[in-house]
Image 1 (cartoon, rainbow, N blue to C red):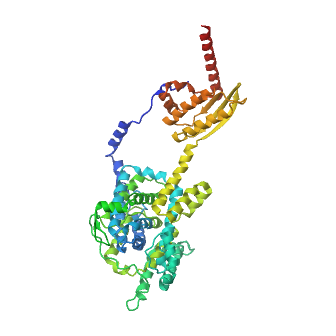
Image 2 (cartoon, rainbow, N blue to C red):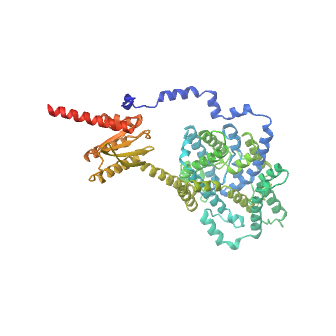
Image 3 (cartoon, one colour):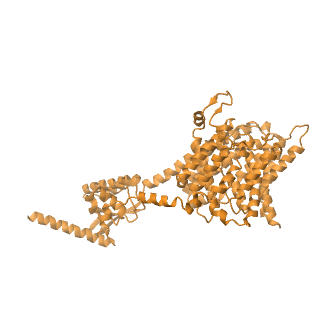
Length: 602
């Protein structure tokens, strides 16, 4: 007999009023202020000893952010200044709203690549995408939808990151060798490269390859067994700035009669970006015809879903990697990222997100608080104000080498090895994501990877783990179904068919079962579809002269069936041991026979 008989017929519903009241009581508490405005938590605890570390880290990251921003502007097919416009506001906003001290928010190679197809010579689309992405991410954060990121598995994110790194690096091969090309994508870039080998510029090729080798070597400088380890570390961290300075000096010193020896990124518009609302209308760059807000939204299409998704994915992945020893609030990170994009769009920014490269440099530089982002932002602003004329001499080959070098270490080699060693079947969603991203597009490849991985989960849920075993107890032939884990609607039909087929196949044998026992101590709950299938299973087994008993099911699971049909209560048995169960069944059979005999005698 069940100890809580009444609970079988009483469904426990969530206490909505209580939850709302609890939220209302805590919405104005200090903890809520700390949650949504993290600066109020860490700033009062700030120590003066943190300031030098934050300044050094901010300066080091700034020296990397400037050349990378210019390079990513070019990747997005935007004027180089737009890369710098995107690189400062995120740092200031994250100080107030961010939860991870190491994160640096700004333009990234993935975001630049995602924006490129929609720019088409008009920066207005990039700025509008920044604003719209920020709004979408911000609302998702407020709705606490950070939990959705749990549905994207590690093999899919690792595959996407690897494919993005390959695609981005491939897109820079032509610039590395001085070939002027507007092609993008893996296949198009290589086809264009091998079709225009005669256009390789010797100076650019030498500079690009040498810069690439220099960057890779400088990355290893910090590991050399030499004195002055701290100096070597900061030299290694500042390698991008060193490469840019060398490229600018060579370009300036080697020019003859005003002719530059390398292809350069071009003139960068001097001055700070104007503060203005993002463009909600524009003009066609070829015909000059006006395009309304609706027309712009129609033109960007799926980017309104893919760019916010990938922006969140990239930023959360970076935050997880560097929030060691601290619980990550994904929804708050989304709020910080959303506000960063919204405010950045008022300064003509393209979509921004957390940068793995610059965050790693920030962490290696010993940053103590998010205040380092203010120093990075200030350096970018000073570059826009005073150094744009100098950066006009940056060779495209140098920028290409910086991007390619960063992509080498964007691939998560260790994680790929762990996936292979842990469960080789997980390599399937990884490979599907990689190939679809490379040979189709990044956004659709990501969707395909997520859907493919979801099919694994659906297939697993359609086939619950259970074992059917024939036993004989006190002369009774029976089948025991031991179910491992939960059973949901997708598996209901499979479970019913498996048991009926098993009983049917042994119907005409000496060991034909007359009782099926389903052990359900691991089943936490079921839905209506499972309940209806179990009712149908009982009826099908009755036609085969076989009874059905559900043994030691949890109260929530058994309650679903009992509330649906009270007559089905009799098939649930509760006992401490299997012997006790069989004794209960035997006693009930004797009582049934006795009652039948009494009826016949009357």
